[in-house]
Length: 126
Image 1 (cartoon, helix red, strand yellow):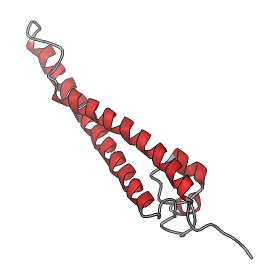
Image 2: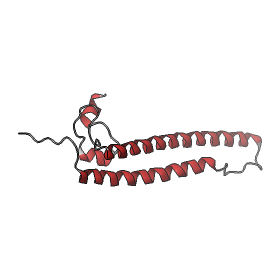
Image 3: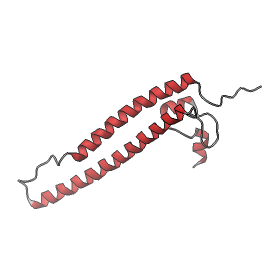
Image 4: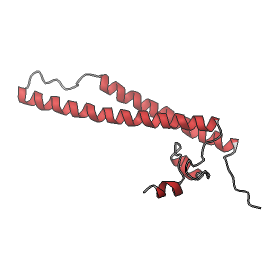
């Protein structure tokens, strides 16, 4: 008789929760830093330079803000995914592949704690 695990034990779930909470705390801190840098004014004062340099500087500042915005959006999505993983832990559905219904390898979950697909399912996508 085969005893294939269909879900992780409470001990495993607690370990995953600890990992996720650590990553969540770091991600929120990084998001806060990104938002702060967006809110701060342009640090380089160009009042004593020619208008050509001012225009170049304004363009560079705009591009930098766009990049920071993109990073902030990605960080927000990562936070949302980690929070969804915490909900799955509470529901005891964490670590179950949404495609195959099998357990996702523990090593994968420790590396990518918000994963919802096993490597098997992930590779089939490509």
